[in-house]
Length: 617
Image 1 (cartoon, rainbow, N blue to C red):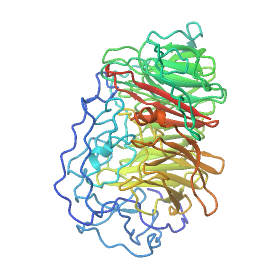
Image 2: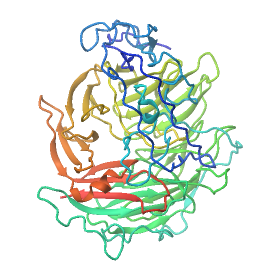
Image 3: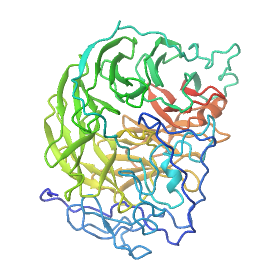
Image 4: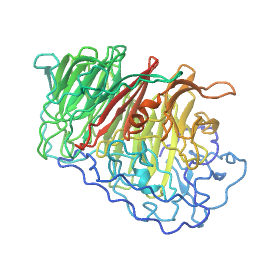
């Protein structure tokens, strides 16, 4: 790859997982991967029992090792590791492997390519892991030892191989039709009542004759349960519940075919639920400045159905605006699955090998991002403060690589391009602005977290070894670059949660200028603490519940030398079971209220499933 000139020396090692100090016992066989649901939409199958926890790793796993004094990402000499001493070769004597920019990485824990069990994983998935979504969602209320974690951890924990934020990819194929997208007004522009409504929205949850009062006996200092909602019925195979948008008036959630909205204060219905003709298959994670989103739903139920029906919705009123049909691109460039993102007034719709930009206000097509250069096919897009495209280039040739581009959202013009070395896959973006990218190398069992400057040039990479564990969703076939919960960033710092190996975990503040640790803070309880968002100069974090203690929302000062968490909301004991039962979840902190919502419905009929839970003062 072409190297930018005059790069400063980079600090430390690559952040790759290190070798265990002792050869572990024969690892157990990983769980069986579920089969994607018919039609290629990748809903993970629900097992009869929750996944079994693997045995704890042998002593020495996950202990931060000393990165070697090897050349930095662009060949500049690097300083010694964070502990000031050079690192010895790995315990099995393997040579160190290069990172995405030439930075050395470590081989996998068993010295074998393809994963901790010596298997070759499917194309593009992180080494040593099943694809995201395996082995399925446990029954409601299950206190799985892997609660809230990406399911790939189940297959990799024994090997102590650090693989975080599982990679997800689009599916190629279909008939290559070239019907052009057409935008037009909705049928009537009004929200309609759901055929499978959730509870009546009186704030009590299940709408029964004797609803539970979660605030009865509330102790001094505990937050108030504002409202709790159960989910609409889902098919036995399960269903997605993507997106959660909170405005000054409403909290809105997608679940299977429904889009439901509640008043933020009391949980009463803000508008009648919208029931789409088929299941919801994609949403914009972001909302516009005037509180609008775009929802995509399936064109039918057959195995040839596509995720190509777009509908704009006003979050405050439920009014439906323009609608459009996403056309397929060229051969193998299908809309069987798509991804949606918003950057300003530009809606980006990503297909398997290209993307189309729309004016989110009118539905008018603005421009397209197609194949370019060295057989580069745009395969994923990330929106928000910036619009970033990721392309797979020369996939079957000697020059195979991924590359990123920042695009002008109004015109599609390329602002900069950054190439990755061969073998490295852009898996997730922990932040779009500043740009922080998590990438994997499946052949070398390696990972990398790198930050980039505003002009796309390399800024730093994580220069120490740590078992980080953000929560990266359930999408299986759709490549959702920004789908990780439990990460936060400001202009100069990335905040990531560590994996709890014994006792509570920690949140680590990483300097984006150097890749080194600034500081860390331990969870104030025995359960893990996860970043939620930045709030001014403070980091808001969620401390998860335990069997006998409710969770809490805390604020952590990021400046100065004191980073002691201060409790913003102590959640009540009355909802421990509900709070702890969100296995696959999303969180939000908005205007002093804390929201939990499900991102996946199991479809089990033995009890009502959780959808949303809101707390406040």
